[in-house]
Length: 206
Length: 206
Image 1 (cartoon, one colour):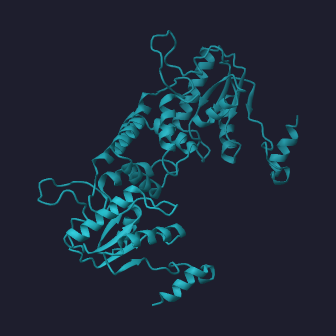
Image 2 (cartoon, chains in turn green, brown):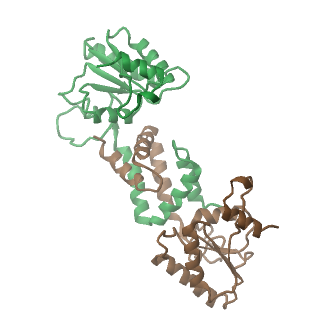
Image 3 (tube, helix red, strand yellow):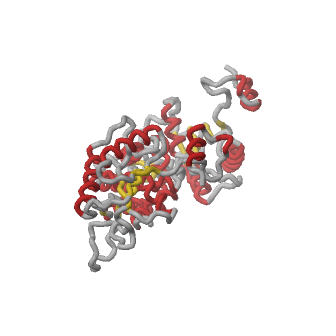
């Protein structure tokens, strides 16, 4: 019943996270009704994601802006920034976590993006590769002089399991492996905080 | 902080209905991580929406499949179907409403898609044009012999207001202007039905 291009669109977009077939169908017709120029532009916007390179050190996507400058072109703007510390590394799950941390402007180290953590308590092949990549970097570039590794994954049950796995992998490299502080979020209420959170808040009082 | 192609993607997709900037950002990184081949394919999927024509009679998008056949190529598969009645017309708001009605397999007439109804109780320029288009069709092609016009818009407050506007526009063309029946939906409970719905259910008992 659906025309083929609409059907294909729905299949492709419903396969993306947090878009269902209903939303995808509505989107397809909505975009169709925007007209050919807008369709072309949107298609180009998707295609332009190909222009991004993936940083070989932290795996954050970046764009090569100035080709002429004599900078290391295999690195993103964070990893190539001489003003940032390379010996303090925050390990995050997603690119959006990196962005959230960057927005605080309170972190002057660099990152390693691991990709979505599995809920079954194992690290996948890509994650192991990326951790090995970090290990090599610490050995070869930092000459083992790493100051701190922050395992900045969510303080959830499976986040904790994964954090332990990651800490195991890295324990020979540094004495200082930390996690983000736990406590009551700003604007939160003590009355509604769970016991774990409140215990952490007591411990981390300042 | 976001690379330009990601920023542009977020802007474009957050402008679509029911996608917020957060979801758009997550989507951008997710799609980037799918790799270049998948990006190309997704971009092409969007671009292919341009291949659809819009039916000049009901305004549903359709694809010209067989160019050689001697059919009217300006019409969708419903409007060009000789087995469907052209003198019974369902006026719907959205393409997805048409699809929902088609799925019932209980309607053998044709449609007119009006596009999103305004909440301010007026029909916009495009909607007036489409209604005029329908009027011309009824006069010229049907020689005024239209059997029924079903105003199949949502039974909401602003749906009702718009239905009245549409009925006003068409009242000289046919004596039979209907709306979809109201009552308790299958699986619903009398206890939780509002008074209006229950009144309709009593009136429409069968």
